[in-house]
Image (cartoon, rainbow, N blue to C red; front, side, top):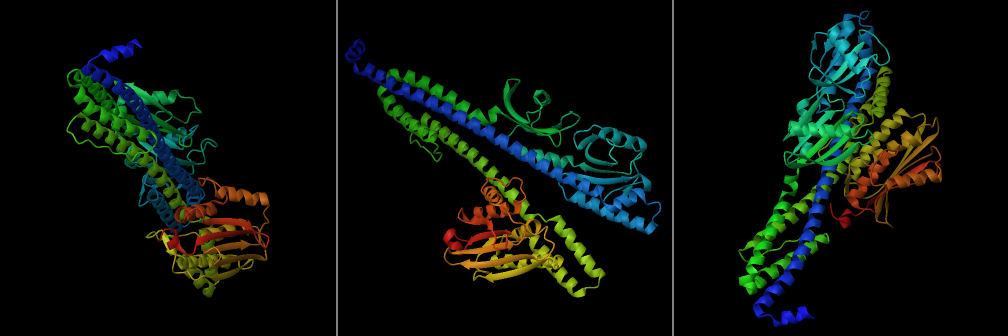
Length: 591
């Protein structure tokens, strides 16, 4: 009561000052709290963005290295390499030269199939040559061979650092199992360090800072961006001190008065670690400057209250109230907020900083969303463009048998369908095709398979649709369903196999249904339910039904959740796979 009595006895000017302080101080406290929440939200988004970039890029590198390792393994079984390394002394000179040319062509394919391979070479002691893609050079010395064998013994990583180069090396026989000197051959791919640095620059993006890739035994490292030896050593020491089961992590490190956000992820396959660091000033600097500016303005406001209480009330209280409302809107998750101030005073700058902060926060959220969409599109693109190697090999052998048997009619049909098949599957000008084009491609694939399995499997076709040329759909969505039927449904069928392909209009549901049914292995209800669950999972994962899942998710991505793949037990005993497409695409958003 004494407080209220004292306030009542004050003159108007002190009352205005007290009223101003009572009004502004809670607002400032709320604003500072909202600022703290906003700063923490930005920090979390930055961490998430850095971790996503590191995880995506180390995953991409692992996938590429796995592919190169598989190529090395495949070349280890190559008949030309095997003959050159063990039988070249007893073979005619012409045959040896032909084999060398074929091997060099395979080395050229190995080099050009990857952005990270600078040069592939094959050393064969029996012919005393090291073959390159376009030439041959002097063979390795005995000391070089022994050094390579020594490096491979006990080596956990498929990559070794040798003579200033990072190489993927395959020695046959494996020195970890047999001690043979000299070995039959040494196949190695030298990684392109310039290409690896471009890969690191892509990881870094435009956020400043730096990125580094180094091996577990610290015998080599590559970096990009603003690198510092002191910071590099500090990061490597920190990563090496982590327990072996910690494959990824993050930290904040301080060096020479500057703080850095550090994110790392280790590849168990490659025994190397990818790190990304960004100076805290690059991402949180505007927030810190905003805090300092806000504190300064608060002090100025307190001084100005003494002489200009009424003017301060009119000029500051209202803008602060609007800013608090804007912060509350941001706190609710609404980032499309922009506030303006008509007067040329400090609040115009504050509003501009607020708008800049919200814009950067919105951009950070958008960057994370776009990175997720890009990763999904790359995954879909890779699955869309892959060619089954077993189908390729078996088809070529079928054509070879026809040619040897002088079966010219079937040979002409096979090569025609095979040509149509590869023209369609390798054409990347458009990601879409008409239903008629997709159906024609599927028939080419079916004709090739029928020529292979004509004594085992009979095919029946039903095409009853009026939309062959009217509706465009994603390319390569029919063939994977047919391929799945051959690979899984009819793989073990010795005779009397049946497959039915149908493309019909369902007027009741206003849809087009493409279905594939076979009389192969009878599947239990639990197995069918498991396939349906895999279709609804958020990522492709690894499964025997990757083709079905890929098609299902691509259709949903384009047409919506109401469309896609469904599986049921077929009337002939096997599995029936149905693909549901909208008959009127204009009603689903237009072409």
